Image (cartoon, rainbow, N blue to C red; front, side, top):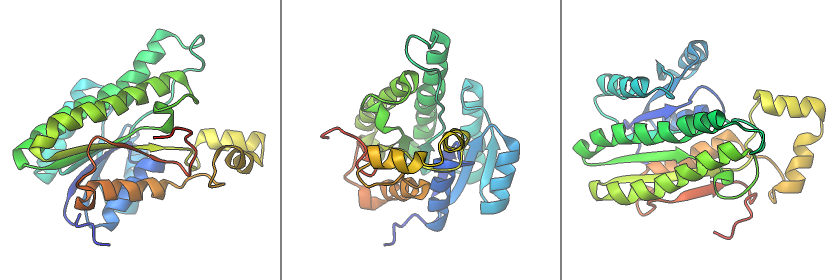
Length: 251
């Protein structure tokens, strides 16, 4: 299927590993021109060498650096067709064990950064007459589970996706979200769990995921390129669960 994304200018936050990197790769396979942003310069340089993407070393938890990021991207690519707000992190433990400052940090990186970048990017999209914004959420932005501070920030992101989509669709800008379930990539958390229990992944999948396995980052990448394409032209304001049936919601 030709998704007609050739030459599209795409910015992916948190694009050096896992889901973010897979999204960048998926757009590259469709012929798009991709820039990624992260804080770790060494990781960025490694991905640049591997994939040939444009890289930006920025801390998107910082207001001024977000503004500079969009400015730099526009200077390099002349426009922005697709923004993927993927960067995020988990903070704290239970609600009683998580101080307010960690809730603030979770909201700032996982929610406020996406809102601000969407505001900045959409100004250019409005001028161009079209655009796509994709917010990477989580099934735990829709239901309980995981870490409460993270869940709250992703729930806020889902609400923003719905609200902002209604505001900018008149400018031919579509805003949607993806809510991944458990996705395996070799990060510290998965490695820790496997070290403690070599059978953890299989046991977790069998107990929690009807499909019987964990998801792959490229399965989120495939969803992202579809949502960015005109094949998804009538999908507006939706946050789509991509989870092998893991979510227990009826909608």
